[in-house]
Each structure stands twice: as structure tokens, then as C-alpha cells.
Image (tube, rainbow, N blue to C red):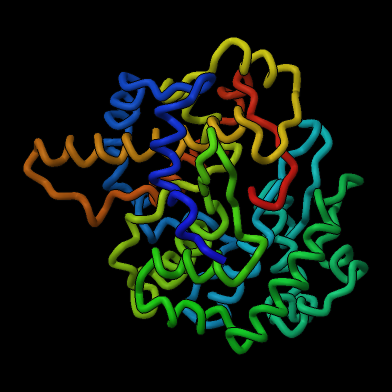
Length: 343
């Protein structure tokens, strides 16, 4: 499996943005977002600590179990949007209802509390579809999307983890030699479901949303220390999903053509790899690279070097939480709909 044939996510994003016809990165908007974030960067929300402190379902300790929890969750970190706002898959955990990505985390924690060793590769490598349906059952009439695909991905990923890494993702992390870039490469080379790649205008491009978020969440759960002390964490781009582009358009940093807006408003379902879908994802990555660069420049003008404190990972975490907290304001901007295992 040769990753070299594909442009990396950063270069893919730049190439897509330069050739995009229906999605545009707005320089003025990028600057405004950077200015809006200027004061936020020093808050707890914009730090690796916020990953634990702001999200009660995430593991709160540094341990091998926590690393394997992150691996399982990011193996299944795809396609949580609901066809219809009023009908959602919800999972109840400790008297609280969770939706979207958090319904997955809640289901994993619920399974662990019920004594199901769901984060052990030896268990999920051989899980049956029925066991998957039970572990990820919804507390509403709407099931979690793509359960058959989740079952296949669990079996495949668990098998590879057992065969190549002795059943623990920490072994894979150690092999990366404290490099986020190398970790993303190891993930993509060894686990087929993480190969989030496309062709755009004859060029092979890659987004690696789940591989990158797995490297980032590993960095976060290990608090950027020990095996998770990735000096190159800024090589990771934002994770191109369906929420981040929506926020960027809402904030004016990105813009859609009339034709694309119309399609989105009609609830058009894109296929993974469609030209406009690739443009949305590529432009949102590049847009965030520019926001990070502007932020670093704003601090440089004040004589501060913030390259340790500002990176695309923290920007993504921040914008993703922003999207969750501003759902109502963003109602007017539809997100793009794709059902696939990549995001």
C-alpha cells in the first residue's frame, strides 16, 4: 500500500482549493475568524487539556486502556448525522442522552460498564453483527447508522491489531517514535478502513480524516507526554468532516456557489469522491491552515511565538465544539450529506 502516490492532506487541500469551482476560501473571512479566535487561544477550551476537561465521556486518565478506547472510537468515528433533526439515534448513559459522535462514546462506555470487553481487539475482531447491534443499540427508534459497515470494520481492524500489533494500539503508537506523521502513515498502511482517498482532476488526493483524528486523540489522551509527545503535531490538518465546513461557511471563511447551495438545501446525498464533496473537504482543510497561519502572525506582531499553542488539531476541536454550541445559528447553512465509513 503506497501512500507516496497520494498527496498528503495539506498538499491535497492546497491543490483542491486552487482548482475548486464551487467552493471558495474567503481571505477576508479567514482574517476575521483568526481575529475572533485571538482571545480564545489562551482559554482552556483551546488547549490539549480541554479534550478531557470539556468532554466527560472521554477517558480522564493516561493509560494503555485509554489509548485502546481512543483507537476503538476513532475506528468507528464516521457518519452520525440524522436524516431528520427530530428523529435521532440517542444513547442514554448515566441518566444523560447523547447524540451524534457522543452517542458512540456513550455506547462504548455503557458496554464497558456492562462488562463487555468492547475495547479489546480479541473481542471485537470476532464480534457478531448481533453483538454489535446490542452494544451500539439506540435508546430511540432510530438506530445508529451503518451498523453492518461498523461490524465489518470492527472485525477487520481487530484482526489486524491482533496480528500486527499484539492487540494493543499502544504498540503502534510506540512504533511511530513520537511522530504524528509517522503514526498517521502506520495507521493508513495497516488498517484499510482508514484509507480516506480520492482522485481530483486526475490527481490522487488524501484526507485521512479518521487516521489524523486518531493521531490527534492519542496526543490528547496522553496529554502530549511520553509516547504521545509528538513534536510534529502541527503536521496534522483539521479533520475534514461534515460539521467543520458548515461552521466555516457560517463564519464567512468559506463560500459555496449558488448551484452547490441549492443542492445542499435540497438534501442532495453525495457519494464519497464526488467532485463537489472533494472540494468541500479540501477547501475546509486549506481554510483552517490559513486561519492557523493568520493566528500565528497576529501573535508574532505582538512579539509572541505561539507555534506550540496553536495548531490545526486544537482549531478543529474548538470549531467542532463551536458547531455543537451554535447549532441554532447555523440552521440556515445545510451540511453536506454523505454516508460512508470515512467521516
